[in-house]
Image 1: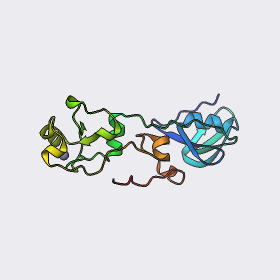
Image 2: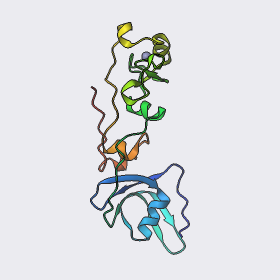
Image 3: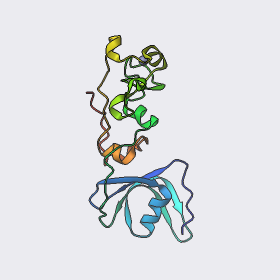
Image 4: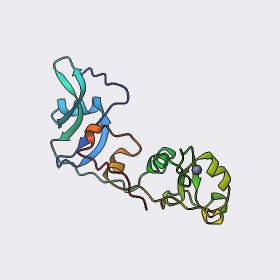
Length: 177
Ligand SMILES: [Zn+2]
């Protein structure tokens, strides 16, 4: 087992043998995949990892040497951080910095806690809105809320991508509805 001390918060992108992005793992786990010949490094990160017998550039992207069949999660988990990330940390009503989560159709009136009914909102809009609907206030949503889709969301979730992964992940801005 190599003695590997990765920098805090670092991760490596794992690609399938077909170059399809699969997941993000710790740098340590990626290095073990490379050292055990289960993966090859396709993009180096910063620094060198030392083990008792060898030195290895920190892997940033690794590709599995054998194809693995992976059942995909079709849903992105609904979490506060994921909602903020989907909405770009902006209020759905005034586009100011978002600090709260708002249920478009209020929960107090039976609104669901689902991707289609939650948006990031600033404290002021959220407070003003109270238990009214945007229509009752004459407000318009910047975009229709929907569950996030795409490879980057499946692989990263709310995690910030390393710029070195951009070639393998579709990192375009989500389209406004
Ligand atoms: Zn606002």
